[in-house]
Image (cartoon, rainbow, N blue to C red; front, top):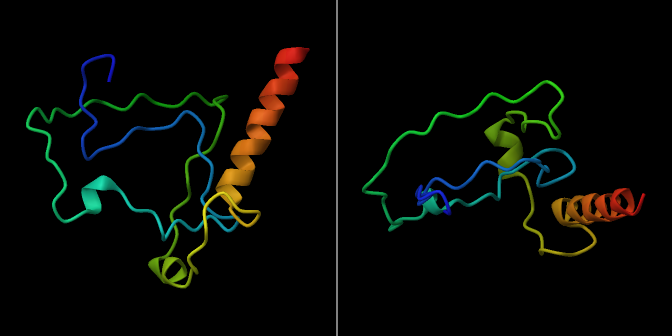
Length: 101
């Protein structure tokens, strides 16, 4: 990252969280750390997570049962049924409108 911190096998925390499906299920989520031979970070230092302001945009993803996640059918990305993609497009369209005003 530009700050010199490694995000290897950890990822990043987004400013805006969009659920992966309309029902909040994220059973198809695959992270680098879940892979068999993922790279480890030798300089692994815990970085404290900053608390979110009450007025901050987005919401944390609610915890779901593993049972619900197993029943989710795989889907193709960037299609009309891709909920996360559709919501991201809606957000970008909204930001574009707000910038014009």
